[in-house]
Length: 424
Ligand code: 2M8
Image (cartoon, rainbow, N blue to C red; front, side, top):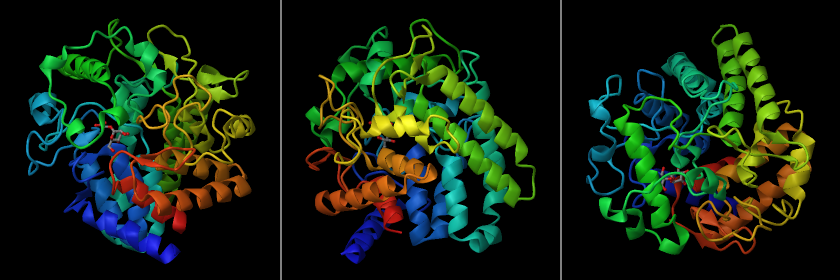
């Protein structure tokens, strides 16, 4: 049975491969997405380590001169109206320092250094022969530098996201409050393409989209300059910052492998961990909350992102996070994949995108973190239940965490990639 699942994962990854990279899903997301590529590489390394390296190399080939890695790299062979917002919205070609290929101008969570390190480890000899680490390392360093300098909007040492799309958890209830001050553009000003491939009850609302478009347009019109804007959105997100720390640990391993000094990365990881715990951890709640960078207040919304600092090596509050994961809000022992949002909240919606359903990528990160902190029995149990869920539902984008019913698009790449990794 595991053999069938393994073959099915490979089939999805092969079908979604497009010459240099993998699309998240053939119809709904027909371009390359940043953090999808990181998760895809983690699975692809079991199928073809070289292809996994190329997945990351193609993404970093579209890195901007300022170090940012765009959240979408557009495939110029795909019809211009296949996805909204497309290249004509982002207009990257007009920005000095943007690459030759059209991209968006916002970013996504920095899962890439970890992915690069895991990819390298799958076949060090093949990676060495291609000079994979030599080429990717300076690009990863520039990426982290961008996030820790230009995106430190409060001086706390943490990075801020300036658009909900940057969180990867687009319509999470955690963004409702900071988004409330953003004036949406009228729906007559844009045409959604996602609804041609997805049910509206499972996707963000038009009101959400009006705000997403407003924020992206304002950022674009400001030349993608990073600054706090009173009418904008700026949030220190626990997931992004946790991945930065995990990434610094991975960069330390990569540096050591290349014969360079790993200590600056370990020092950066320590600094970031301290800032993460001091700024975003709520000891009474036992979870990390996002912080609104414009008001300085924590957004007390219980999202899976608040548990994911568990993926940080040596996190001092790991035991507390495990306790919260086991509580009624997330029900780690039964709910699977791990719910994206508090099961006990009145506005939990088990079918709508990032407002309740479980996702395989965040569950994989929690599984990774449980293993890191010695919770091997919880990690194994989660792994088995995830494999069972995917076997039953197929490679859906997200699942009802209590019933296991599949939602969103099918043949979703990171579901297949991370399942392949979990089988290993
Ligand atoms: C979703 O986000 C895109 C915008 O980036 C969308 O809704 O159109 C999110 O689930 C995000 O995390 C993911 O990277 C992307 C592609 O799978 O889809």
